[in-house]
Image 1 (cartoon, helix red, strand yellow):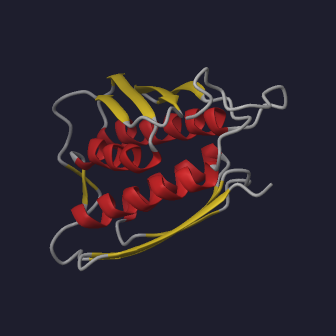
Image 2 (image 1 turned 135 degrees about the vertical axis):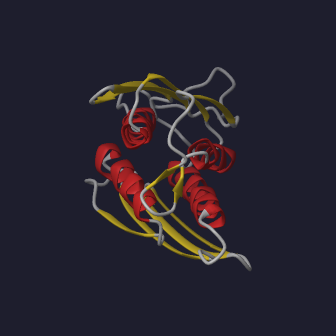
Image 3 (image 1 turned 60 degrees about the vertical axis):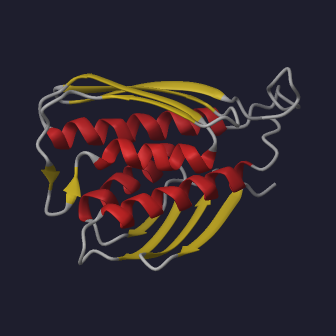
Length: 197
């Protein structure tokens, strides 16, 4: 059974294509025009073992907000499509990932109910690289959650370097998402007493 998703999203602000294979090997082909965001989506593919293609053309002459937001919306929708009926998935997962002085703790429930809890150290540098606004990290996850319909809790209890703080979040997110969406041969039903997710 193929567990793939493909979403095209076009607005006056962006044109986005996302393709994802949940049972891939971590092959990534990412181009959003925002260098550090590309790096983070590459982390998602590599550490989630998802084959991921992202092609975004956005209004970067304004700023990077619409590009990152719309990419995350399309990614969430593609992930939800790839999950299909969710029969046999593990559903719950968590991961902790350190990156030098920073630590991220991520827990996910592929619940069908979108909810985000997000906490990271205050006082981070406002940008990473040329055009990654660090206040967008939470909004990226909000946008993904809204379309993927998962409950996602992210906590970074400590860290100093903004690059490390954001990157460990994406790595832990990738690991938790991978484990939650993986198939368990012992589960032959939708993992919910309701019979639906």
